[in-house]
Amino acid sequence: MKNTHSYTQDLSLSTDISYDLAQFTVEFSDDKIFVLLDSNTYEYCWDFVKSFRNIPKNQILIIEPGEENKSLSQVELVWNFLGEQKADRKSILINIGGGMLTDLGGFAASTFKRGIDFLNVPTTLLAMVDASVGGKTGINFRGLKNEIGVIQKALHVFMYLPFLRTIDEENYLSGFAEMLKVAIIGDVKLWSELKEFDLEEKSEEIIARLLWRSVMIKKEIIELDPRETGIRKALNFGHTVGHALESICLSDNHHLLHGYAVAFGMAIEASLSYSFASLSSDEAHDIQETIRRIYGKAPIELKEREKLIAYMRFDKKNEHNQINFTLVNKIGSFKINNYINEEHISGAISMQTPISR
Ligand SMILES: NC(=O)c1ccc[n+]([C@@H]2O[C@H](COP(=O)([O-])OP(=O)(O)OC[C@H]3O[C@@H](n4cnc5c(N)ncnc54)[C@H](O)[C@@H]3O)[C@@H](O)[C@H]2O)c1
Ligand SMILES: [Zn+2]
Image (cartoon, rainbow, N blue to C red; front, top):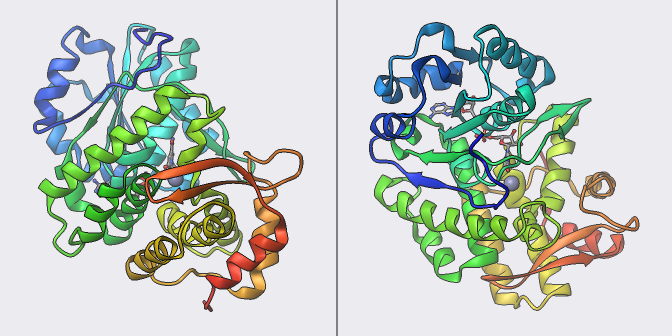
């Protein structure tokens, strides 16, 4: 394995994905290269990539797409595939897909024969800005999101913007929310530029630049704290409420993408930042209005406040039975480890829930 203990996440923005992969894998013989796709990325993305090498068909595995398939049985499929095709510790797995696939493929590779190398080629905006970078891999288990996993970074992450031409509007906006988050915690100038970005036109050139800035902020944070003992918690802004909202929607069979949940979470956590950090009311409104303009209103009714808080009690970040938030002092600067009592959380939710489904 080429991964070392020092934590740097190598990544690049590619203008020719097939050429870059050919260059990167030049030292691997054909029989050591394995490719993982889901049926959508096989249909929409593989054509951009496939000429990089002459990979035999039996070294390509296509799995089922969708969050419900980020499961142990699909990991077993990957392990079986790698075993049958005689992958060994000199092999490399290339994950081509959204966050579901890079999480699952990264986990399968990191555990096969105690770990083989993998490359991530993210194909959704969410995977580019967030999921494929930073080494969190894993699967859902017993109905719980990301319950089983390891932290193991990809050998390299290649971002290639033309993949975004085929993702739908909702998935595009879902990824965009994580860019907004990174700007809110780390870069006020990026925040202004994201607000001005024309989401109708979706210029590939502009999003490439904004994406790169967002990813650099994430990279800087995760390299300082890969195991999330301190500063990496900054990336959880919007996520304490967001994860709870995702869980409610999951239990109601109500479809809600991760980035939307995070966006609504950020609106609520902006109110908490106003009350418990030093966020000004102008900036809190700016965050909330921007989110409302792009994502509409949160899909939760006021009467569900208690349920939402109940889910927050399960958050992995909590300590001493208190709910832990990352808040914002001003746009571009954050404060981790804020423990807030449930009455105040309830108040912040009320302010942000006009709402019925
Ligand atoms: N590891 C991390 O740090 C981290 C961070 C955030 C999210 N995640 C995980 O990421 C997952 C969500 O990722 P996602 O939003 O990318 O979802 P996804 O991988 O499920 O992709 C969304 C849909 O788009 C399809 N698709 C992917 N690329 C496409 C393309 N270029 N053209 C057309 N269709 C395409 C997929 O097949 C799927 O149907 C969740 O499982 C979440 O837990 C992980
Ligand atoms: Zn997220």
